[in-house]
Every structure is written in structure tokens, then in C-alpha cells.
Amino acid sequence: MSTFRGPNDERAQDNLDIAHHLFLMSLNGELYLAPITQKPERVLDIGTGTGIWAMDFADQHPATEVVGTDLSPIQPRWTPPNCKFEIDDANDDWTFAKNSFDFIHVRYLLGCISDWPRFYGQVMEHLKPGAYLEQVELSTNFKSEDDTVNPDNILGQSGPIFIEAAKTIGMSLTIIDEMKGYIEEAGFEDVVLKEYRWPVGTWSEDPKLKELGRWNQVHLLEGMEGFVLAWLTRIMGVRYNPGRAVPGLATD
Image (tube, rainbow, N blue to C red; front, top):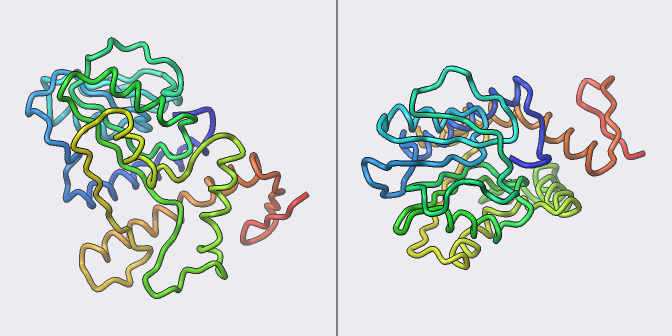
């Protein structure tokens, strides 16, 4: 949902659907937490990706008109009759009627929006009075409670590197830390922030966290290469050496 973030090939699309499964697991199978009316008339999914959330929502709410927008036309042709997709850039002026949506859903748009305060202003303008915005984002910073992730290892170094790279093109990878303040500044009331943990791997003794860790490990293994190579080579001027068993990266 931007002029640039990463690849959108078949492997990347599969990875978006893996992320969708992780989000569902985190929310105990629910598509959203907002206390919206049981019969919303119109719902907007910004940055819909493969369209999986929008289609699932449309199936659950057959009387609701669901609109999913994205820059990439990668959504399936066959959809629920009450769901449609449009090619649109959320950074531009929105063309939807103002005060026309009962619920606006935003997910995984880090690195996609150039002006978040303006974005939230448009969200506010296009929601009906009393309607809801729900946003779900990820952190690019790996963290650990026992300091095994620290500035001396690659996981501890990776987040700050990409955060700085994003700044050079006017994008933010830290919206997860900023969105509550921006949303409140846009005029939203009763803003609630919930945090969830996604382990990497199956080390946790908690059954749910173990399963989340299993899927998150797949999510990272399948998606990290495309994300890393896109950002390092296109933004940071790093040269990719495909002859290495592990992708070799060297600055010019």
C-alpha cells in the first residue's frame, strides 16, 4: 500500500497469508477486537494485500459491503458477493464519500505511509460518527527478556538498520510505537493499545506461544530474504552476491 516496501511475488503473498494466520491466533480466532455493531453497513480494509481479511470479514457479515484497497492487484478474482477490491494508494487524497464507513481496518502498513498524521486525519473524515478504527502493526526490533538479543548479534542489529533505511525514503518502521499518539491527536477517543508477543521458534513451554513461535519462525524464514534484499539493495546500496550459500551482501 505504498510506492515501496518489499516484494509482492507468490512467495511474498503466501507469507502475507501466514501472517494473517498469526494475527488470528493472537486474537483467538477473531478478525478484530473493536466493539463494532453486529450489522455494519460499510467496512474498509486499507492495504488489503491478498484480500484474505476482507474476504473473511465479508463471509462473516454477508449484509456488509466490504472494500479492500491496495496498490498491487494480487487479490483473487472470485470473492464473496459483498466484497470488492480497488487499486488505491492511501497516501493520496481519498475519493470515498466522507462519513461513510462503520469500520476501517489497517494492518501491516509499517513502511508504507509517508505522512501518518495526514493518514489518520483522512481515516477520521471517512468514518461515520461513533465508528471505529482498528490498526495492527509489527515491530521490526527483536527483543528478549534474557538479553540474548543485543546490539552484538545480528538480530539486535537488524531492526535499527532498517529503521534508519526507512527514514531515508521518508517512511517509518516504528509506527507501532507512534500510532496511539497519532490516533489520539487525530481526534479519536477511548483509544486502546494491546500488545502481543510472537516468539521465534518453539522454545516456549506455553502451548499457545509455542504454536505462535512455530508459525512465526516459518513467517520469518519465508519472508525475511525478500524483505531484507529489497531494502538493502534498493535503498541502502548494498550489492547482493547470489553465489553464496547464505546470501552474501557487500557494499559497493
